[in-house]
Image (tube, rainbow over the protein chains, first blue to last red):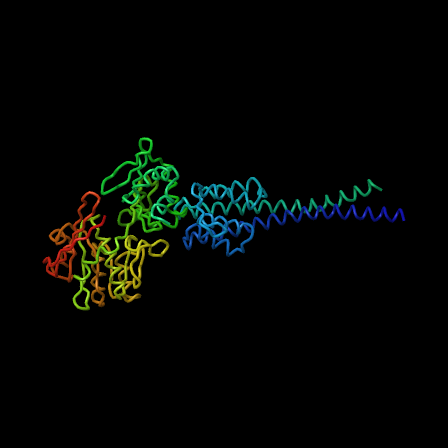
Amino acid sequence: MHAQLKWIGMVLIVASCSGLGVQLAHLCVERIRQCRQVEQCLQRLLGEIRFHQLPLEAALLETGKALGNQGFADFFIRLSRRLTGICDSGEQQADEDVTLVALWQEELDRYLEGSLLQEEQELLLRLGQELGTLDLEEQVRSLQHCLDQWRQHIEGLQRKVESHGRLYRGIGVSVGVFLAILLL
Amino acid sequence: MGRQEEILRVLAPGLRAALRTMSSCWDEVEEIRLRVGQPLAVTRYGRSVFVEEQGGHPVTMEEIRDTVNLLSSYSRYAFEDKIRQGFLTIQGGHRVGLAGRVILEQTADGGMVKTISPITFLNIRIARQMIGCADQVLPLLWERDAFYDTLLISPPGMGKTTLLRDLIRLVSYQGMTVGVVDERSELAACYQGIPQNDLGPRTDVLDGCLKAEGLMMMVRTMAPQILAVDEVGSEADHHALEYAMHCGCRLLVTAHGSSWEEALQRPCLGRWLEEGRFGRYVLIEKRILGKNRMFRYQVCDQKGKIIASVQSNNE
């Protein structure tokens, strides 16, 4: 009976450590999925500005709605509403002394709650500083540049995930086996 | 939203605070002038005065930049054409003139304005539709059930566009279909395609469209009984007007000129006046007496003979 409990304990340790490794690898994949959503939003916004020349508030709203009102798309919708001065309750609320850059920063903090890497934050903040203040040609170039950098960032992340994913899973199993042997 | 709020919301916070000090005389303000490094100025009763807040509020480059961002709703790219033409129209129909460093684009026939950057001078013209100013003029432009082709003549800033706007509103309420080609968004003052001024229930507006092209489009697509257009001048405008005339549309147009004689000197317009193309001409005079603006409208027949003279006051 005692030996059986030991074996069960060992199996649980190995399983939980391996699970932890798999979970870490999954988080990396999830991160890429989130970054892809941001990429989609930026791509769509670029299209709305380049081809339809919609005012920013309308371009953000259209993009947000088209991409499913979730995550970064929801950030766009919130931002659009604040830009038009309409809060959630539908009452007129003028963000009188707030600039777009401040609104962008505030909403970014609120919706992504520190989940962004330093590099990602800098990229998006730089975009917020340039958005809406340039003429069409420059605005399209600025968005395209941001999009290119974002894509490069995703490629870098993907390379990391491929190597780190295997590493996390391997370390999970190894640590589990090591602990099990140690506790035998 | 009141007129004051419509204007204040598009100004940088510092300018907003300075202008709030003169809330009591807001109704008298005609223009707000922003010039970088110079005191904030407003025009009242045709005179420019500085806004005296702690000895005058010098306008900074940042304030002009923030104001331009607010004017364009942080969408400068969407207003590129308007900036190229030197003006923006904001909610409420107020027109904002822009000036600064012009960037030219090289073309085969020289150069054309690509954009203004940086914008360093702004002139916010507060729109006030003078409902009823054409009440006495309109009956003189009809003969039985027929509306005369009419040309309004005056120098800039004398109320030509104001009179045209009210005439459009009145004929529209009287049952005529009016097509308006509003190249500079002065008549309907469209904001995102929606007229901010009352042009009547039977009026269609082509906003921001070149006059010559717009006139053709209106005739082909909207079948107007009266075509209204502000400030005709070029050869192309006259060709388009001629086309419209031969399509059975009546014309209601304006042109610059301080008198009948001066209008006769203008290349295309002069020929039209000599040929008697218009059934009625209205010459406009404006006088400012204290706080009272007085408009005098002289209505002339086909040959330029004055047939009536009416006055309109605006306090």
